[in-house]
Length: 215
Image (cartoon, rainbow, N blue to C red; front, side, top):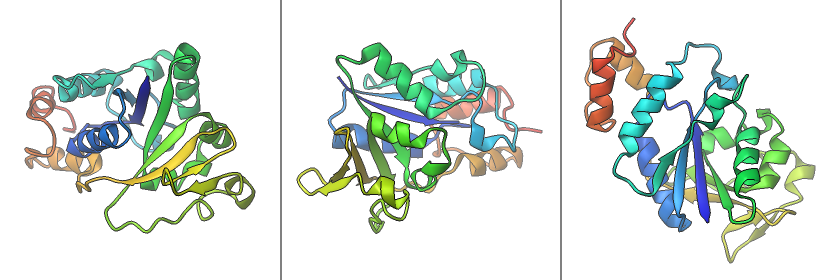
């Protein structure tokens, strides 16, 4: 099994998330991509996050009909803050014999990876698929990771990726850049502007029906 994990707050989910996931699915010939919403994201405690229930429902509506997309509530089942390293551990322990795991992350998030909990352990546990924008200049690993840690990886031109000591690889892959942000969508809803064509219509209707993002 070749699975991708795509985490985030998804507040709300939009076409940027969905299109990026679809392209990564094809680039790595994955069987499935699992959307994993954060319950209590440690990096976003400065603002109020929409309830997990509503974000969960919007994800389910957005991926409905795509047999290669699924959803997991694993981070809501754990107490405390949501940490990616614990989520990856969960999937690997449950499917360790059959699973090749790809952790999908945006370019900006990966550049801040050293601020994550147990980031060294996380990087060595699975493959990383870093989604980059068109025209992105591959900056390698030296400018992102400490030199001694980055030195444990070597670039393999056959797979166009940086292979680490555990055999897992960090890949940079360009995906279509859809300039959509969840924060901007929330602002537009709050001010009464339309978010049509930024997210599946079922999600848009759910936001309106439940008066989400309205103060």
